[in-house]
Length: 232
Image 1 (cartoon, one colour):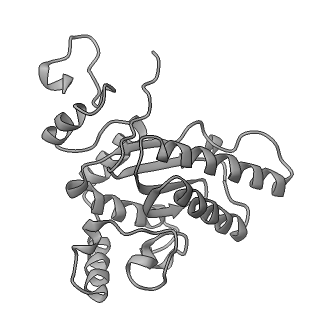
Image 2 (tube, rainbow, N blue to C red):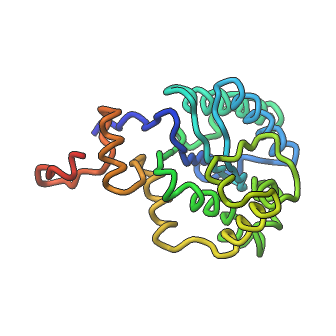
Image 3 (cartoon, rainbow, N blue to C red):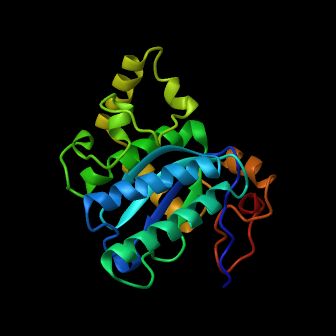
């Protein structure tokens, strides 16, 4: 079966996962992580993509980003992938691929999933038992959102600004969200939609979204014709 084209639409937040080939490490030193962040910053500006959140794990990374054009996110990811692989291969005296195929992504309903996705991203190192709390991990956007540092890569989404009227109020409210975590159902939804490339949101949101693209947004069960709802 031919794979579907990647779902990317401007103005919507997208959760992105890029894994190392065969789950191999994609960093060999602290300088490698710093270099990837530099490359992300440069290309986010070039292709007009607002990066709202990220985490760099040992063998993959996550982004939460909103592109301003149809091709902004794919072009950014292609440029980042190529430049970082060239840098990494040169430094490690290696050749060949570093990534496990093309990146995975999902487009999400902002009011329902954006803050949950930010929390999901921040808690990756905690779920992996690398640290006990998100604030202990240096390679994510969490410290920016709780006021511990300023991260030039990050463009906060309007929904984050709505958490409070002052920086302190927003930082405290967001810290509480991360401390509370997300439900197992939210975690599964974010993971499954991203890995499979389906739109993530309520039925009304997906139906409205489908009007903007001919690309199928939901999985159709095999063995029977799709129902009217599944076609939405």
